[in-house]
Image (cartoon, rainbow, N blue to C red; front, side):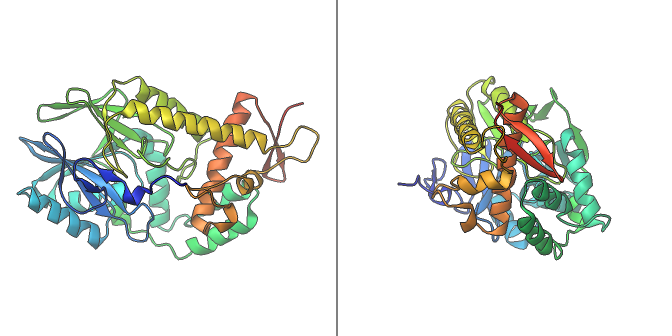
Length: 358
């Protein structure tokens, strides 16, 4: 029987499904405001409001759509505040549901935006698309082609032709955050911890004094974040992600404040589950690849024999977007196996083909 869906997961701060609108007390001086994600299976993104003498500081900002702005304003009103009380946005990564509303509102009210320094290549790539310098979806189309999925790549490219990005939503941050940096929020001290994997410049914020981890998309309580899908791809995103999980595991065991899903008591417990999940997927990927001497498998070939989502659907049952994510995530697993020496990767006319060593 499948596990409960993310949408139905109840958060202890609200006693209701985690995406229920409101301003929920996640910890003393910290409120969680879920903002809607139109046409997105994740349903919502959690924005965390930190109270301080200098005003309100928000961890992540939401997607720059009117419904999200209205819900953020309603949540702040419930706290006796408003948008103009926000002085800073600390953004975990550059995906649109975290970054774009932050940049729009910051420009409007004179707030500052901070983003991990590792996200520079991703933001530059997005701005290139928004400015019309490069085609939308081009990087993903190239990756899918290398995955041996030409039909999927063509369909992704066709759908991307109509994508229009507003350059005003993708401004540069006021501050680039570096490893080892500490951000003061009133009496709080938030350690900036780079956690590449979901994106190359993802960061989490560890409030050791209050026992809190503002985890963004790095550690999610009911799902695994996508791996290998970003505007400026890296060579071994899963290797980066597993290393980042280990780094978070070496922090104290903190209360998990995720971007998607309910607040959860133990960061360590969830990290252990994620590490175990990916090791299982690595085993499954390796088992789906033939031995040396037999025709090799592409990432698309392997993705087609693996189950997907909590309902264990076949790749052919997924829509273009989810099938693309599944194929790229499979590629990330195969690349890590090749880096470990458990698989051999060959190139066949620009397509990566994997086989087991003799």
